[in-house]
Length: 195
Image (tube, rainbow, N blue to C red; front, side, top):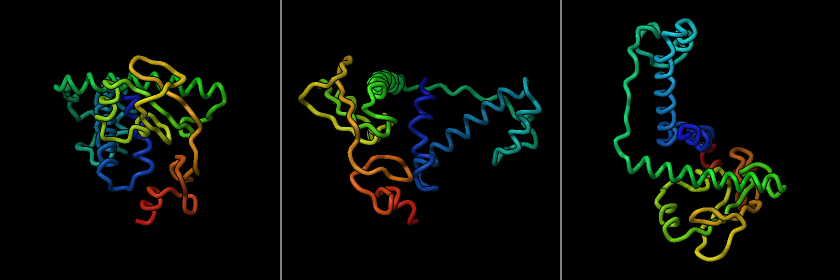
């Protein structure tokens, strides 16, 4: 479930960020290591297929995939980090339920058309604000705000949420709804395209 979450929100980074940005390179490195490990694991079962795929993998170490050793197990030693991400996954699952219901009620189409307003309790607010990344990007919506007071339509453990249509213009490159676009591009995309 963590890998599906990772792949979901990193698509935006892969497709939109500038080619040599550290965030994009980080995602590419993880995907490369995952692909290489998967090829190593499948080689005893599908040697010809994995070897063919291995040939397309840049910077491979050997002439053939079956010359590689099995991948080493990498254990995450930071249990606190695992607990934090599992909690974030649970929050995201609840937000996805709210988005799905809003979709069924024709409030929004795709999740990028949504604006989330979260009404968290104090503990949840501190937890959400501990993420330095853009929370809207993690939840795959265009706009998001956190309010101390109010009540949302959807009630979950530790927070309530409203799902409304995002207001503004749609960027033709990243598809996010932003306050304004210039020649169809948001400020972020315009800066990347200029380079």
